Image 1 (cartoon, rainbow, N blue to C red):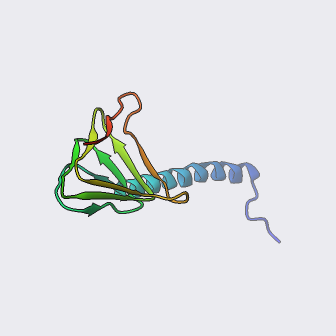
Image 2: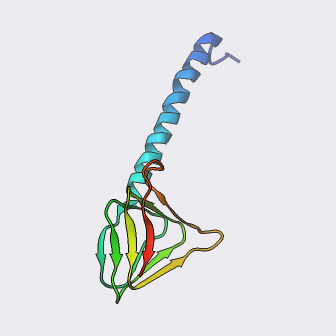
Image 3: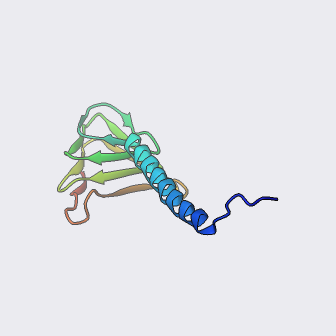
Length: 120
C-alpha cells in the first residue's frame, strides 16, 4: 500500500491551513444565521402582536404597547435593548416562556444599558 502523503511535514502543513478555513467558514455561517434571525422592533403596537420564536429582537427606539393591544413574547426569544430604550406597556404583555424555552431580555451593550420594561 502506498501512503497518500510521502512527506509528513507537508501533510501537517496542509492540515494547519485547512483547519482555520473551516473554522472561519463556520463563523461566517453563524453570523449569517444570526443576521437572518435578527429583527428590529420599534414603534407603536396598536393591535395584538406575537413575536416569532427563535428570533433576536433589537430595540433601537422605544416600543409602546397600546391600551387595546397585547404583545406576546414566546420562548426562545432574545430582546436586546439599546441605550436608554424601553418597552412601555399600557395594554398587555404576555411572556410565554418555559424552563426549556427561555426569554432573555438584556441590553445591546452592557456599558450602555437599556431602560427595561415599564408597565403603566
